[in-house]
Length: 103
Ligand code: SF4
Image (cartoon, rainbow, N blue to C red; front, side, top):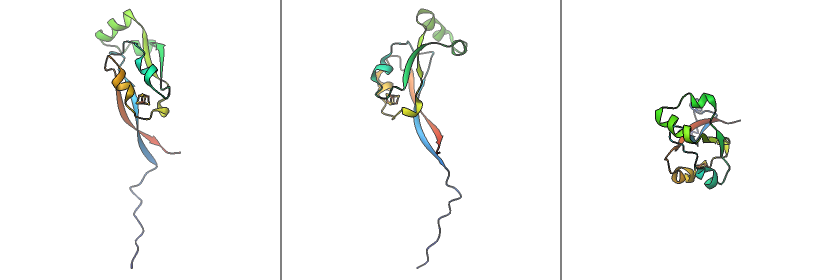
C-alpha cells in the first residue's frame, strides 16, 4: 500500500465566522438586540460623529429624533444564533461572514 502525504499548500490558518453588522440608516435604537443577545455583543451608544457623517437622508431623519445606535462591541462573542436578526423591528442587522485568523 502506498500512502501519499496530503498536499497542504492550499491549507491556511484562517477560519470563517459570522458576526452582526448594524445598518445605522435603519437602526432606530430600540435596543431589542441588546436585550435578546445572550452574549452581550451589542451596546447602545450615542452615534459617533464619523458614523453620523455617513448616514443617508433616512438615517439622518431617524437619528435627529433619537441618536442612540446599537454598536457591536464584542464581535468575537457572536455565536451566530440569529436572535438579533429576528428581534430587530427595523431589520437593521445582518450576519456577515468574515475571516478570522487563527492564533
Ligand atoms: S447572532 Fe446571536 S450571538 Fe450573535 S450577536 Fe446576534 S443574538 Fe448575539
